[in-house]
Image 1 (cartoon, helix red, strand yellow):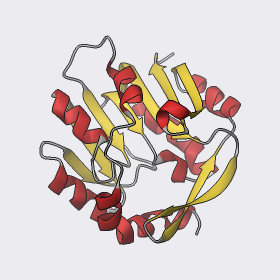
Image 2: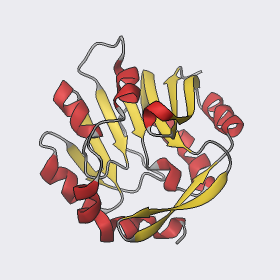
Image 3: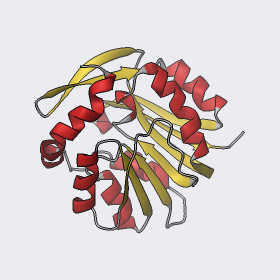
Amino acid sequence: MGPGDILQTYEREAVTWARQRNRSLWERPALEACVAGRDGPLSVLDLGCGSGQPIAQWFVARGDQVTGVDGAEAMVEEARSRVPGLEVIHADMRGLSMGRTFDIVLAFNSFFHLNPTDQRAMFPVFATHAAADARLLLTTGPAAGEAQGTVGGSSVYHASLAPDEYRALLAEYGFDVVWFRSNDPELKGHSVWLARFTGA
């Protein structure tokens, strides 16, 4: 399965994935870092929001204004039914242009399904949707490469650029890296970036 199969896979596996999704909120340390020291409510753009649980739901429960975007219509329906108060939009994150900016932009366990070319093209999308002093949170791999994972009974594609290339892209589009936690055991072995938008 390649990157072109991602949306069809999630259309097919949406119900199973939403039911089986780990909702223990192991992502909490990264989410709390996004909101630390900032007055709410915040506006949040969740790219590849899936079922909305638990990440979008956590922000909604805080009183934040959350917009979830997902390219799989079946996932959008799961999110609408599971997270009252969540604005959900059926759209592909690639080339997204909403005409709005947000205090927090997330691409958590979604961005890494894009091929390397599409990943590079997402950085202007992140910048276009980032308000002054916005936080960007995204997951990648720890090093450049491609891999296969599973969603339900289906194989899914993952890719990553090298960390140095992500740093260069973030800087090019006005983001300062706050931290990069590679294969972090506190985040279940995920490699996670937190960056701050300076617009510079």
